[in-house]
Structure formats: C-alpha cells, structure tokens
Length: 175
Length: 85
Image (cartoon, rainbow over all chains, first blue to last red):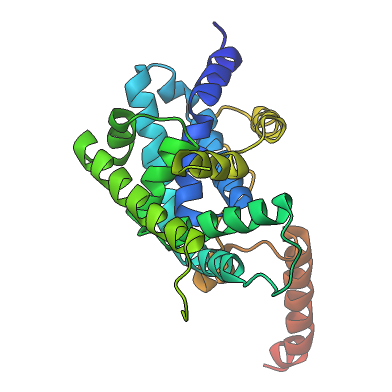
C-alpha cells in the first residue's frame, strides 16, 4: 500500500474520533475541524515515523498531538465555549408557535446547553462515545484513563442530561 | 424522544460532514509528508514575543536596501570629518 493510501486509511479510521475529542473540548464543530486538520497535517508531516508504528501506537500518537493542541488553545476554547453556552441559554420567545420543528429545535438547544454545562471530562467522553463512535476501552486508551473511569464519566453525563431534560419536560410551577 | 435519541441527535449535529472531511484530507495531501515542512495554518495566536521576533513583515530585500541606504548616508555624512582629520 502506498503512503497516501495508507494515510487515507488512518485518516478515515480516526478522523471522527479526533474530531469528537475536540468537539468535547471546544463545543464548536468548525474549530474542531480546524484542530483535527492540524493533527492530521502533523501526522502527514511525520509520516516517515508513523508509517512504521502499529495501529494502537499511531492512535496514541494522534491523541497525544490532540491533547497538546488542546492545551495550546485552551484560552481560545474557553471563550468559544462561553459563547456557545450563552447562545444555548438564549430563551425561546414567549408565544412562539409550538410546531414540531420549533419544539424539536428547542429540545435540541436544551440538550446542547446541558452538554455544554457538563464538566469537561464528561463532555469529552460523551462526545467521543456519541459522535466519535468509540467504546469505553478505546476512549480510555486515547485519554489515558481506565475504561471503568470512562464508563463512570458517561454515566454521570447521562444522569446530568436526564435531569436537564426532565426539568424541560416537567417544568416546576413558579420557577 | 428518549435520552439516547437526544444524544444521537446532538452527535449528528456536531459530527463533521463527509464532504468537509474530504476537503480537509485534500488540503493535507497538498502538503509534503516531510518532518521539516512548515505548518499550513496556525491554530493559535502566537505570543507577542513570537510576533515581535518572527512575524514576517517587510521582505529581506527591503531591509537590505534600507540598510545599504543608511550605510551610504552615514558614510556620506561623516566623510568630510574623516577627510578633515
């Protein structure tokens, strides 16, 4: 297999997971795409090294670069995430038509807002599982934590989301 | 709609479309797979120190020309004093 074909296979195998990782960190799809591009650009520039590594070490390499990039962009991400949260919190105007589409969009905003409010570790884990299609073991390897920790974080995240949606579905009188 | 559906809907909304992923791949392929290759884009803003020392501004030719002009003016300005001495 030539270099480009092999790199393409690596890209297709891990791009969703890397993008999901950054989505969990930044909460922004386009920023995550830019960061994902940077990770794979570096992988391509270091292909002479990566080509000789087994698959698990290649993935470890990708996520090491991803974590380093996250640290570098942490300040920018906090600003971005704050904007995302503010947008997600924007109240729906009173008297808005209660069509299915509007209700669906409102519910999606509640979900997005609740996910944005999750602690970062839980948000990253949830994004990698839901958007990246990774299992607990794969996420654990990528993040450097045990698979049991990943499952615990997912459980906490789901509980928080369930509570947020319950508040949305059954609003308290006078609140 | 249950929680799994809600999470799946959110994941679908944030997931990178295949067309965008293909475009990114093509951009990466346009670069050389060399360790020393310069990055295509800067992800983070460089610090002020880095900007002050490495940011490309005027070209090298401009600086050489300016330096040569300055040197010529200095020589011209100091030449009478040199001859007088």
